[in-house]
Every structure is written in structure tokens, then in C-alpha cells.
Image (cartoon, rainbow, N blue to C red):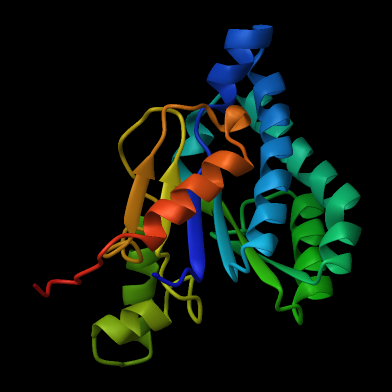
Length: 225
């Protein structure tokens, strides 16, 4: 039985779901938040300690401004309404990515949520915002050089956004797309990857538990026979 500490998810397919069912991408993004809540609850039940959600990539700035504004409005609203639930369930929220470019309101809300939940240990939800793995690795290397440290695997890991977070055992991507899209490239060297056809708003607890059970039965060799 393989232990699971960390699950990472590329929540793909919100926009396509919205177009398919409501002819509106933004409705799909809103529906995807319901799935986020379900998966957070199930992660607590499964006693998973870290859940990383790919929320907005460095490449997503190429999207229409109207959609970007809607996405960040959703994020702000989600934090304002759900922070009390995170606190009640002793869930820590951490942002991984570059927060510098966000609006003042977004930064204040994110910083406030991180501050209010920083001591909790039931589950840590990492929100990957303005996150790109290549950019993360470059910043880590620059930090190492600035500190005049040796460039080693451990020092690179220690200078990533995910410092002190174990590498994910499982990475899930919904939406029937088979690529990592610049997400946790360094951290996923030995991660088991599960690609699903389902769009993110259709993903549910049953799908999640099925993947967890599949993972637990795998023989993981890490280069050994």
C-alpha cells in the first residue's frame, strides 16, 4: 500500500464545460469551484496532507482580459466566502507562484488567508497562481547563485515555491489533454500521472477515490528492479 502525502491536480476543462452546457466559458469556471470544494473535503477524509491545485498559470495571461478579470473575481469571492470553512477544518492555504502582479485587493486577500491559516496541519491546499515551473526553476537557480550556494538537487528543491512540501505522489489532469503544461516539472520526476477524459466540473469524489486506490496498488520501483 503506497502512502499518499501529496496530490497535485491540473483542473482542465472548465471553459469547454461552460461552452458545452451553457455556451459560456465563465459559467464553466464557476462550476469548477464546486468540484474544488468536493475534492478538498475528500482529501481531508483520505488524510492527504498536501493538495496542489493549478489555478492560473503564467501562460494564462494570454486569455481575454474579460475572462481573466472574471477568474480573479471568482477567486476573491471564494476566499471571502470560504475562509471560515478552511479555518473550521484547520486547513492551511498557501499560494505558490508570483503574487507581485496581482491587484492590491487580490494580494491582500491572499496574504490574509495565508496568515489566518498558517498554523493549521489537517491539510495544506497550495493554490498555484501565476505559476510556471520553468520560471520557478530559473528563480531558484538565481537565488542559489545569489546566496553563493552549490547547485545541487537539494538546494534547487530548497529554493522552489514548494520548499518543505513533499513531491507529489499523484498528479491528476482532467480534460482529456495529455501534457503537464509547465506544472511542477521538477517536483514530478517520479510522480504517477493520471489523465482523465472528464472535464473538471464533472470530476467527482468517486473518480478521485478510484485514482487513489489505483495508486495504492502500484509497484513503484524508482529505478530499481
